[in-house]
View 1 (tube, rainbow, N blue to C red):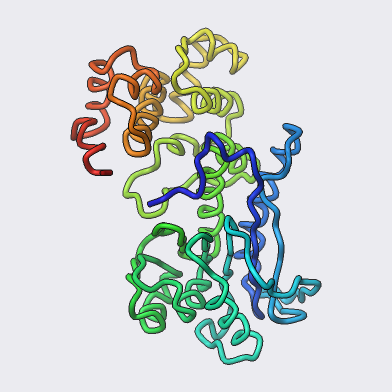
View 2: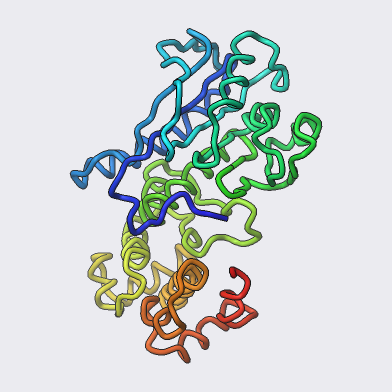
Length: 335
């Protein structure tokens, strides 16, 4: 699956984001992802840089209702075109989720079919996938939606490959989520792709939400594993390791970051993450090596060096602790 952006260059430019809103919008489908993007921009402002995301709210209707009885207005009209790097977000609605017969919905469908291109990225929250499927945007793609609407999606989009029991599904430039709070998970995932895993974890911590499974992965993403706690000192240590996995970390350095003793940090880290510091650092380095193997043409020695291993032999030894196949097969699988 192609990432939205190369994290090493993603900070240079902002990404335009368009929420396409319809009547009876599920409030949390809108507010949850929007708050994730707002927090990402707060981090950018704190670092005295431009916003990561330029968020706009567009609609074919002058005003809409929401699931909590709050009416919204003041939207921008549907634009004549979308920038090449735009992210388009379709939220779920309450009531007749699969009814697109209203004049506003028909305008939205026509606009989607005309203006959505493969250069854009589409995020569907909950039954927003039904609108995308009705417009033909999910044809030939794996996707998901709220568990109670999977059959509706199959009916509306028979050429789509609907997957059940998924928090979210990523298929090239199309992302679909299971609904409601999983829109936050999907937004955090996309923010991680664009701004980096450490920033996404920081946003989740600020929002006091769990970093949950990474989409359809059967296991926790290594970048997000061991983050379901609220201890600030342990989070600081994890942020430092994720920010510089290849750094030659020693216990004293990490204890200084945590502002505690080495012995106390060792105890705190295991208590709150269920992992030792050594295992955590090695897991993050293996995750980085996996990305380098799949996303670059670096040889094995360069991969080992970039990921913080002393040699390819050490990379293979540590890799075998977490994987049942050698690093070379990871590269073969991605080619």
